[in-house]
Length: 160
Image (cartoon, rainbow, N blue to C red):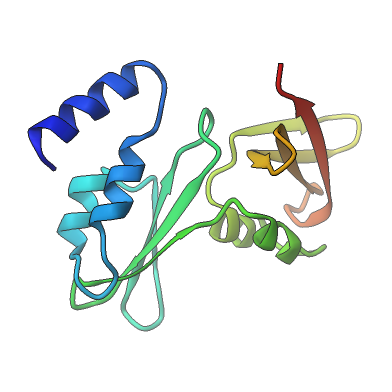
């Protein structure tokens, strides 16, 4: 990362903006960038999964303040295979009753917030996201006491 880019990222970070990801996404190229490039531009992963084929999938969570989470897969040859922003409508639609906490984490990345509802005996995970109608949205996954998805819900918060 150039000094100018690093300085700009530092200023934007101080303001609470995540524009540095924009710069990193432009620089990271599947099939070309290495795992070292990914860590240099994205930082330390918040979680790592080992895949059956020997590759690693790294989670780069931008929650709780951000509205994105990235999953980046790096092959056993240390070459980046893919990069995906996973807090999406398409992934929300893939959430099914009976899925485990681990499956949801692997699908959507780290939630922005986790709430335990004692009376309902539920745990609720929340992700923030934008919708095309200029509203701040919240997507919730509700788990039972065994850690299995019971249902999902959404809430819209108009921008003020």
